[in-house]
View (cartoon, rainbow, N blue to C red):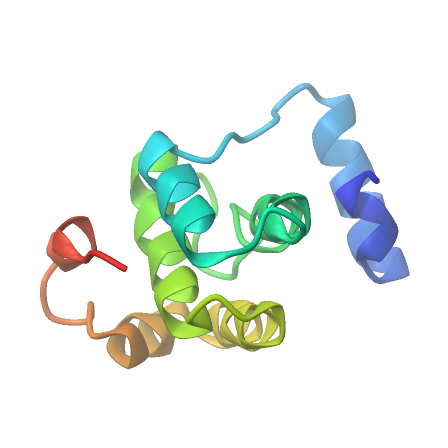
Length: 120
């Protein structure tokens, strides 16, 4: 299932335009590894789609961020999810409200490299 199908109408338009422009973002290898360690095989595609469609450069304040910068956001929402899709959605909503609050909640607010050291 294409991730655009689970978004609101306005987000679908943004998502479709994003893919039409050929600017598809990919999750980092570390993000994928953490995702696989936290979530069941059944939920992996849903989780990956949520991260790619609702948690990339469309997060307010993250315009133009590289994959390396976005990894901090992705790992933060994954940490807060504790392997639960509903908690992941809540964390993504927090990121879309204020990514700085997300970093603080995940314990990554004071150190730009802390997310790189975290192990699930």
